[in-house]
Length: 152
Image (cartoon, rainbow, N blue to C red; front, side, top):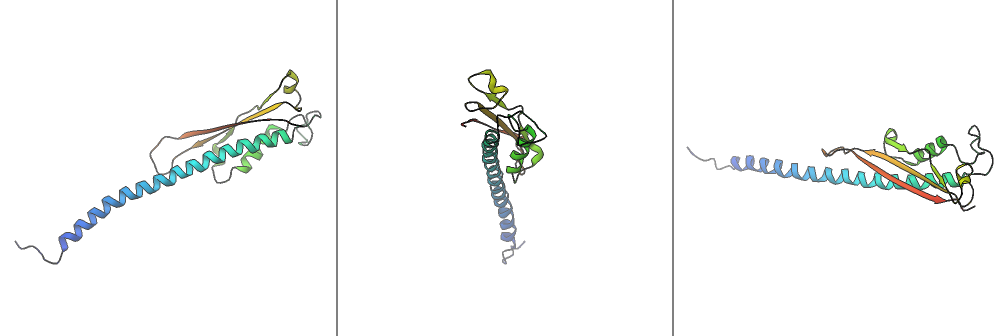
């Protein structure tokens, strides 16, 4: 039996080596992309909790609570705050966003739960169920909690 001298055997070896190297490289690249998505989502959830809390304390008033008119009330309606938070979370699946309700309105006295006034604190928790697209890892819940004091 004679060995072909045109390099046909080495071409087959190169294809096998490329397949092995490409599978490792592609797995690494897609893993980096998935973890990048995770970091983006973590930052987005943290920011959503902060802007949601700010929205709640800025729109809190001393007047009687009336959810039919979002401009009148001791606290903004929870549906308004949740809609505002979800509007700020672009680039993620809105069905996976959970805003923990009721919000915590706390202060030095018991009236903070009935009326939002300066010195009262509002806290909002935002959760997001993150699923990896390319990696066979279990889904993770990304949580963020923000708390702010009503200054005026």
